[in-house]
Length: 319
Ligand SMILES: [Zn+2]
Image 1: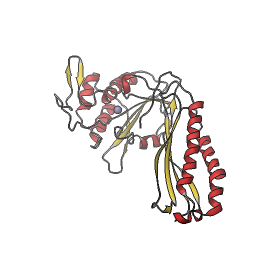
Image 2: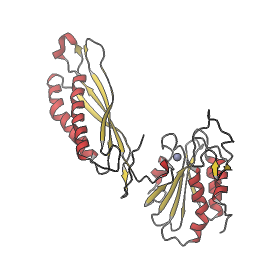
Image 3: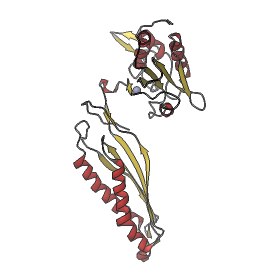
Image 4: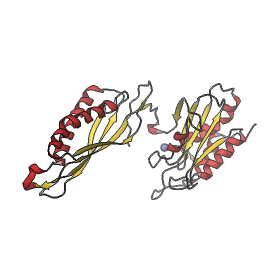
């Protein structure tokens, strides 16, 4: 099957013309891409949101029974509201050897390169498949791609590796730290502060937990040195704290949030186990001596996988 061949810039102009600002639908651009791929004999799978307003697109070129290489990008762009443009942001123009238009670089440029290469991919007798994985809602927190990732290894093949053509600093980023976040709830026993020994002060015990976390922070700094990152070690920060009822009440609860930005290889489970052990051995026996119902609950609230290949570049993820 031989569909039309477009130059990359021509394809890019077509893609830019779809206003896919994150809060808008991306169905029209995905249908355009689906049609384009179909013309080249490549079937797409669209994974829709519940309201049908947005979709991820996944397609495979080459053998379907093997794990391949995925080329991935997002279809959405950031808003143009309040920005002063000399030209229509959704009408690509070429000026002084540059292409202007919303998303020409981030990242419809990559999508256009991938799509323009499809006829060439088709001509080759690929031993390893190439997967195309185009997402939505990247610009608002990388959230749109998650339903597609959930299908990999289930209804869709799981790629061996993924190239994301995001133009971050226009350089290869092949490692990032993994933010891991927890919330701790310390529950003590309230009492009037004039009768303090009858209570269990949740803030005091949260303070002990914070001290332990700061010891862990120092150890992480000393033991996770990795020049590929800036700063070149895993960090731990107490990020939130709240608690207390009134200035004359022994506080019954205190909530503490903390996060670790993990370097590759850091055993997060071991860190969490150490904290749990400290709580069980040092805090809870003293709390229970006064109030058997006292507790310290440690909840993992968010975990982003860290990642690193064998390269040498430095990178820190901001999220
Ligand atoms: Zn981007």
